[in-house]
Length: 325
Image 1 (cartoon, helix red, strand yellow):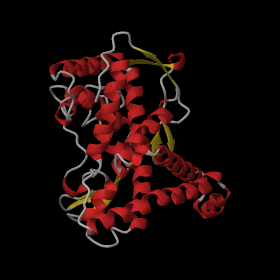
Image 2 (cartoon, one colour; image 1 turned 120 degrees about the vertical axis):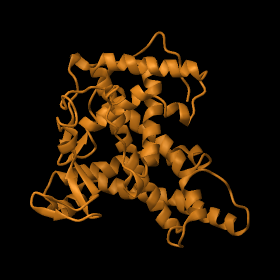
Image 3 (cartoon, helix red, strand yellow; image 1 turned 60 degrees about the vertical axis):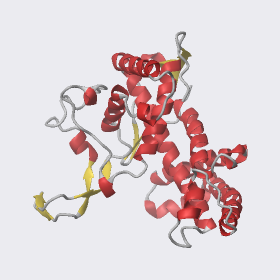
């Protein structure tokens, strides 16, 4: 099977629920749009990365994916704009609906008229779908690939998941998801070795310093190399080797996704979404590489990604518990 396309379809359904709410996602066309729009956005973006920037505007006109993307934006707007207008009318009439989704939240809590504008919200929904679906799916597939390459780590993670499931009687919540140190360590190790990008943006300088004869002031922002720290042998022992349990060992290094206003705003959603699917996959299936050859990371410029055509062998485990989240 091809893990990336399969996981992207799965995440598309979850992202659609978060964006539009349970009533709207009952329309299968809207869920399909969330998936196809994301696919076409990335097809255009990757194609434009392969040619000099001066040719991008000409290449875009020749790409079928570009025109499909425009059609998807138009169709998505046809769903979202009338719904936003309906919900705004409900609020004005005092019939406010309570639904934990993006367009409801923005309609009720948007600080300006622009933030509550139907066209702006339609664009926001498409942008969030495109920006989150593939990034989470890429991370999940890389984590799964790394676990498959290290059976000892995979078995430790599986044992932890099954033990936690028995401990909580199969009733999973956010607290249980946040208390899986082996799984979280494996995910952090994958993120260390294969981050989404090799360049880390908007790092804040904590104190005045000089780097490479360049004076930097406290509070100044800069762009840094991700591997510069991730592959530093002074920080990580044997940094080029995958050690999935590195971050739950006794001498573990504390890692997080930023803090305060510099933290990744969607880190909790991405983390929980990836954990939920990984837990179910690890419980139900066994994985192996085709021909026993581990998968390599692909890259375009500074971006690392799991290739959509990568294949893995999958079979159902006979002693699967059937965890439901």
